[in-house]
Length: 199
Image 1 (cartoon, rainbow, N blue to C red):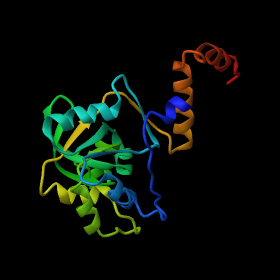
Image 2: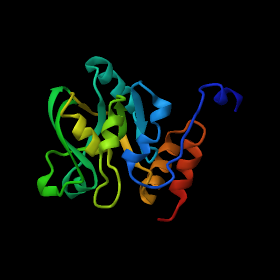
Image 3: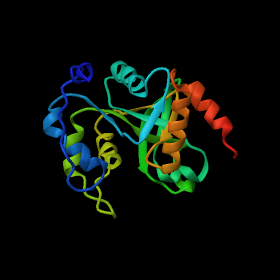
Image 4: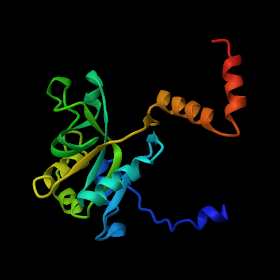
């Protein structure tokens, strides 16, 4: 516990009302100041050899521009995500032309869904300040990024790895099982337990 407490200095702010991801990010403005920063949504768990955020940071360092994590989503499920329209500039890296929040399947510009990993620059805060709440009263980060896209380039990374939706009860259970089966101390006994179940 002492080692963990010495790894980083942790500061936090609270979003007192559920007014959208854009509003949540805006709450951190004073802590972030004039620095680039990462946004990681805790219900998006990514299992990958190179951490998903590191994959985004590599692209940020190369292009000196904001970077969004994406994954391919087939069929109607794409309507549950923000979606990018982009031009592939290198394997798995896209220069974004546009982005849309939760489009209907027939109008989705691609099969590349935005997931909960972002590397953003502090100019996003001015756009968030100007972004009006949508139909359900939330300030959407996608709307602010779309506005900023008119002023500067944005990139997306189709990350390598497996994404688990821990915000969904089934997704949380699947992630728990998958990670348990990879755990050095637990995998063998847990595997035996699973095989013993009469399913």
